Amino acid sequence: GENVEQHPSTLSVQEGDSAVIKCTYSDSASNYFPWYKQELGKRPQLIIDIRSNVGEKKDQRIAVTLNKTAKHFSLHITETQPEDSAVYFCAAEAAGNKLTFGGGTRVLVKP
Amino acid sequence: NAGVTQTPKFQVLKTGQSMTLQCAQDMNHEYMSWYRQDPGMGLRLIHYSVGAGITDQGEVPNGYNVSRSTTEDFPLRLLSAAPSQTSVYFCASSGDRGFQPQHFGDGTRLSIL
Image (cartoon, rainbow over all chains, first blue to last red; front, side):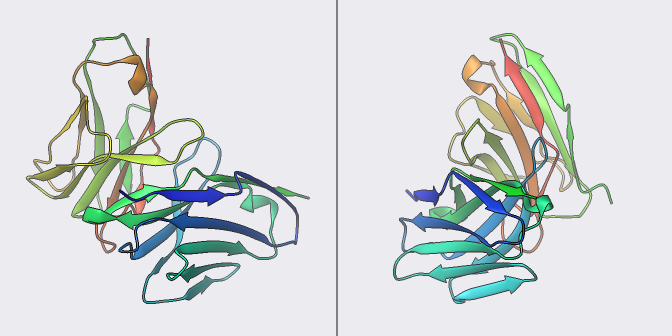
């Protein structure tokens, strides 16, 4: 089955700097890659997603890039703000249209 | 719109007890799913449904049952609770992304003693 690895597990950045989270996946047939943000004690929220026919997608301060050849995709957050502090999860659509999640990255934005 | 509503928010059970976690959505979404989230891990799919009357197993279905008699409701039943089922459970729905979770409920924090 699909295996998704996410790095780093924790990330501390200064407010205003950029943050990058990387995920690799194993199933070359996967074609949908969402990212979720989860604040402490709250529900996960879908923040951006990308399909395999697109190499990059942007939404304001967040962007996702996909390299299908290398089987990795990344989340980029620019001009980080304290409210960006949360746990971020990547996921990849596995066989049977089921999502496999990465282990999460705890992002701390220091004022 | 309430979105996805889960009840209860917290529950403590004894080993061997059964219970049902409720999930309802008011967005007329066809796709609904249940995930569990354990400390330090991502979400794992338990069961999912692509429409009323249709359910299927996810990654970790053992010990859980689901049914989908209406579009709105997707309850998750624990048949005989075990300590390994201590977790936070999230219900999710999706309208336009296939059955990939688009809207999550607030979660149910379940402890099995």
